[in-house]
Length: 202
Image (cartoon, rainbow, N blue to C red; front, top):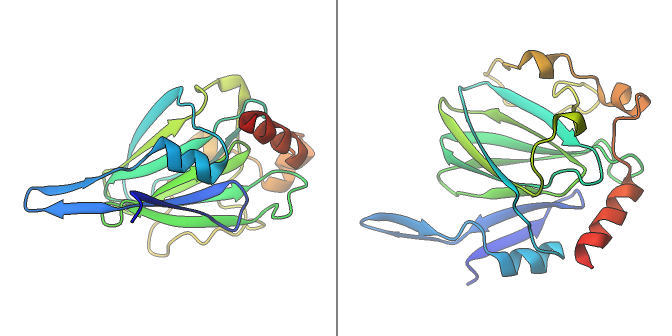
């Protein structure tokens, strides 16, 4: 049995990672990230240039965030305390699944991770207090290249959990809809992303 199971979801470039856990009377051990199976599944290695950590109260909604392509910013996301609903949104203009989203619960039970390739929008909602999320990033944060789409845009229609009141930052609250972001020329294109992926595989 492999140390991690990696499968691509319905959006090209979005992968769910399920690690094999080894529990005993002391606790649990797992390999959350392993370079060789990752590169085999995705088609190229992951170069890590920044690691982020956020702690959020229940209902906190972060995103939808993305960065200009190139170089954009791929993310490998895991939750180390509590639980979140982690969401990938295809914002690549011209993509066959443009506007589609995929959601994966990340928690300390299955201890899954989610990998989002460059050009994919990322958002998550904290399902518990003190939800602690870490993400490995392929590029450092660069304010001039960072953008957002409103996570409650009805045209996208993300199925956020009932029973929690979304709490957004002022910046995320002011983010444009997907249609507005497209009209403003903020979104990455499918072709530009494909060119970037090809260069990463070279």
